Length: 74
Image (cartoon, rainbow, N blue to C red; front, side, top):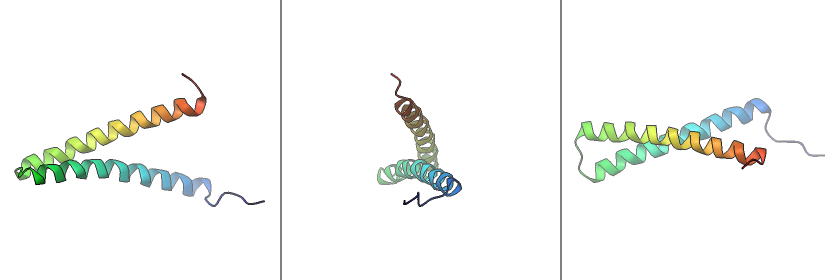
């Protein structure tokens, strides 16, 4: 029999890295949009912070939906 390729610890580390990368991608995309719109440096930082907040909220929502889906509830 073939077992899982990741241990539980490795799976948790990979999951945490994926989540942080997801939030960072959304945050940096906000900064890139601000850069493309010729924003000031302060506006760019605000856009990155707002993107990180939105990314965190989106991640929390997706985790909530995932837990609901895994439990089979509606």
